Length: 396
Image (tube, rainbow, N blue to C red; front, top):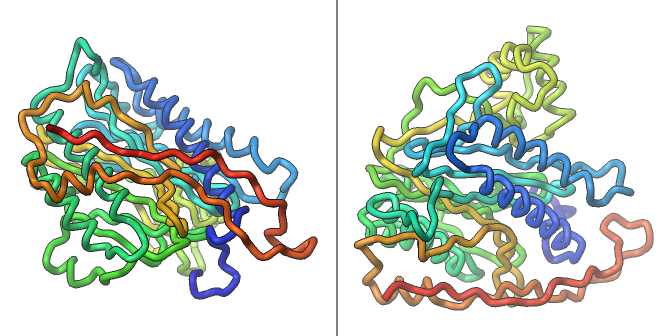
């Protein structure tokens, strides 16, 4: 869509507002789900409740715009310990029940009118000032957190994607960890969760050749996803059922009625946004219909990946708007660093300087060409929130 002259970007005030609204909803839902990550909690219930909240919260904005599409941009997944991503079990499947000390990676996204905000966060069940996180669990949490903070400071106009790739690897290595191999962060574009530009993690030699070197530019938006492992960082599929899918641009005349019904519902309810088949009316029929759609590439699956048993994986994901004067991070929750005690730390001074650099969180006021009444995007300028600055306290 970026080739089309009519693509709307954050050069427009209204688009910034929609991104920020989506970001606020994503953060709000994430915060509620973090609070639900307690011993004996059901992962399936956390995911289902999160999807319900995303749908509910997005209906509360732009109520007068009856034709505007809003809702889930990425269904809630809760991947525990060595599970890397995309775990969101169905009612018909075995559940996962959280235990004290589990590492839970929450991943979700919301959109307003096709403008997407994604967010990911890792919580350690039961962590507190009286029950601090230590050992490899602390190592991987701090590695992922600091790598994400560095990425935020490096995803800015004039920098290149592989600068982020290499810095994330160096920070992970400081904690004897590795980024999960081949994981991609995407540029977010109107109606596209997988935009043209990418940032790859820990690429193989072949992957490094395949991914194009690209510069970040003003008025771009990125969903930056940092996933770090205590192990080799190589994800494998197991018997876990895939439940998250996304419609592609492929076309095919489906033969089975169940497949046609499934695909029709996907087009109507989700468009090009990823979805969990749980959200469709009849889970059994959806499972029956999805097979032919996968075979003919009408939908693509988000496979559930696993690290080796006994290893731990942590994730932090945020959405950042590249404004003319600064980066503006619109999603992501803080963590209490005092709860994590590691024997390892970042020693490289250059890495420390990157992590501790100040990031302006101000969404600057923009002067945009006034649109004529009735023209798409015409609106009064929306007042932006007060500016703030983020500076991360580095380790001694």
